[in-house]
Amino acid sequence: MSLRLEWNNEQNAFAISEELVNKLEQLLELAGRAEHVSEGEVALTFVDDAEIQRLNKEYRGLDKPTDVLSFAMQEMGEDEIEIIFDEDDFIQEEDLRSGELLDQQEEDARADEDEEAFESDEMFEEPLGDIIISVPRAIAQSEDYGHSVERELGFLFVHGFLHLIGYDHQTEEEEKIMFAKQEAILQEAGLVR
Image 1 (cartoon, rainbow, N blue to C red):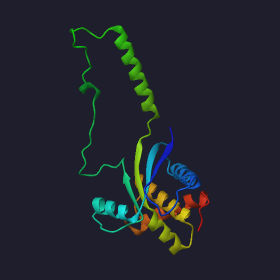
Image 2: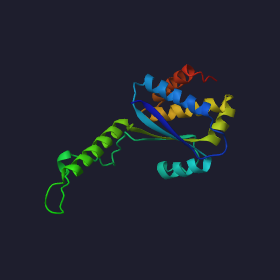
Image 3: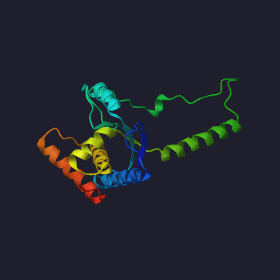
Image 4: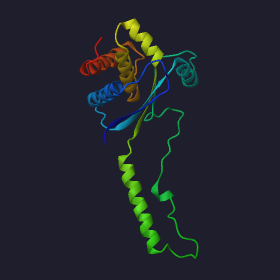
């Protein structure tokens, strides 16, 4: 298993090229290595300002566009309920047609299905979370900072990833740490200002 990027494009402001996706996959690998995260799936969606404003209002109560939103899947908020499944709670299925157990052929078929399900579970990557990037915001910010749109998208992606794994920038000290990590990863990937 490894870190995996799944992405979706829901905007028209900037073409998402294969080269950009390859660079984002490289950034994910570098950030994962730097932070000792070797497994998981990150879902990335490129949106326009209207969509990110809608999401920002719905989830953060801020009725304005922003550049990036992160939704961590591993995080348990204080109002969330943890669901724990115990194998003993499940009842084994029986054949109720005549009160007899399933015949050997049906049992063999179920065993094969169970084995296939187990193998597909081994290929399942635990979701780390979702990153939503406003491409119009990224374009405007790249112009403000005087670097490429690709560099800004990379910056926002790494920023979002660090949020997914628990980093924040509520204090000046947290911001220094997070931004230094972002810059080191971007430098290593060759996305310089």
